[in-house]
Amino acid sequence: MYRKAAVRAAPADSGSMSGVTTDLDPTRVDRGTESEPPLSRRRERTRERLLDAAYGLFAEHGINGTSIEAVCEAAGFTRGAFYSNFDSKDELFLALTEREIRTRMRSLEVAVEHLPDDPVRDGVIAPDTIAAIVAAVMADPRDERRWCLMNAELELLALRDPQVAVRFAEQEESFRDELADLLTRVLTQVGMRFAIDPVAATRVLISAYTGAARDAFLGPAGEDAVLRAQSTDWLPALVGRLVEPDPAAA
Image: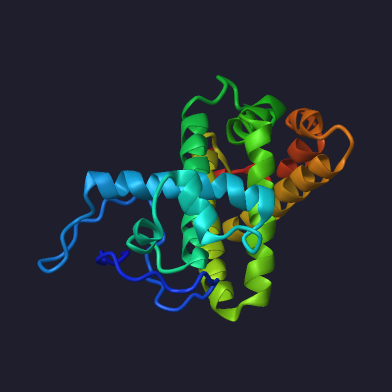
């Protein structure tokens, strides 16, 4: 839970992780404690505007190329408003990535609730089912490009800073576990199951997806290539290797 701090003198603009709290979920409604009231609607809006401003700036200039002042100026706030919500630029960055993960998980939840009428054909997940799920996540290729850049920035930051690495690893593990649970539920509903450990299978799918997106953005076709990637045959083939009929559903 982020601390509700009084507006204090702003420290120097640095990437330090010191004083970072443990709850990164910016969508959470803070219920507070007896000595700590919940976040007000005004403060929630302030946080969201800071996160929105940081998203574009971090993707365009990188975390090291973006100052706290630039984020505040883009959001229309002072440094005091920033430091009443985040202890550091690193904390803002991690909170931003957590928010984007939550957004993509919600898109997946909606997609799996509206699967095609025949998601499984001849004992395999139908390609158009997989394409529909991927399309839900990649609805806007331009935004997906920014997300690809954000992921690359965060990985570099984690590789350079052991304190960030710990938080990054926890965030990645939580995302994989949550996604594995979601995919397992979907497979169960259609009479299928993972042929290997669900978390390991999910790790393979995430790696393949992110690698394909990165390669598409590096290519000359850019965003058009990402759109075409939604209908390629390698992803259904990979899913076919990772998924099998569930004997318990027979």
